[in-house]
Length: 189
Ligand code: SF4
Ligand code: SF4
Picture 1 (tube, rainbow, N blue to C red):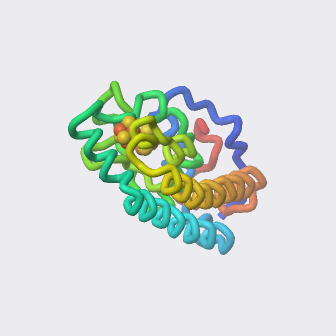
Picture 2: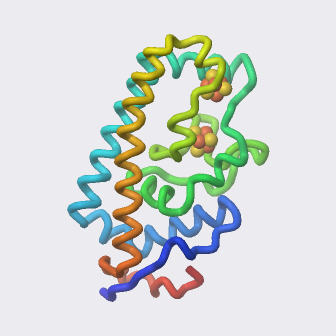
């Protein structure tokens, strides 16, 4: 195995599809080493737990019910096409490490790339998606309940930030072994 480094801040990603392809490339190169890394493994596990806690809190507060009704009977969805661009390849790589698959294309080109018929394809989502509280939710859900959800979601966001920093650092400092199956980051990355 050879040690390689990638400065992820210099990757050129013009479209969401570019971000997805880069995430697959990074996963091919580093996925095995990242999964074997103790620090990354612990952070992935904690992130998964905190995402679950946020989802439980959203469900208990009535947000999931409200959003399902809104999507089915009201404005359709608030997952706009521009939000899909926020994710970035390292966040998408984290989703691959969490066992999620990424869509090969958008279900609807006028909406977010990651919105599928069964909802969002991502387990780890951008802070904008995790934190978004629209006027309908403000009107329908008691303020205290929304604050509680945001407090719990804040812990998910904190751990995601720590994990992204950790993964970026390990990839950019060449601290990981590249998979022997790949020919290295100089393949158009
Ligand atoms: S966040 Fe607001 S706009 Fe978006 S689906 Fe939920 S209720 Fe509808
Ligand atoms: S929640 Fe998922 S589908 Fe909706 S905007 Fe965010 S990434 Fe896209």
